[in-house]
Length: 141
Image (cartoon, rainbow, N blue to C red):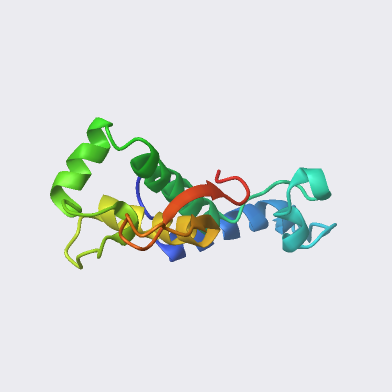
């Protein structure tokens, strides 16, 4: 889940299995549904059971990979990906090719979430004009 974007149908199938385990029939009798699925996926700290929406969790894990590429640009992985996919610019300004590898497409998927939660600083004119990512709202799993 932390390397590839899982198909939406696979995430839905896994969540369906979880719901079936908790709410499905046992010995021919339906189980009691003590709370809704929305309550089950809420964090434990606010009264939920702490289950995860697997599609969102997958995207959060991919956002973490994109975050690592931004904050550790000298790592071997970041240098290899930069040499292949975004030689001239920054990861946040990259146009993703349609024929990219599944791993690179997964990073693009995570970067969408990362951009939504980023705080942008106004550039002083010495940079590309887009500003820099200076912090994040909330935690990325």
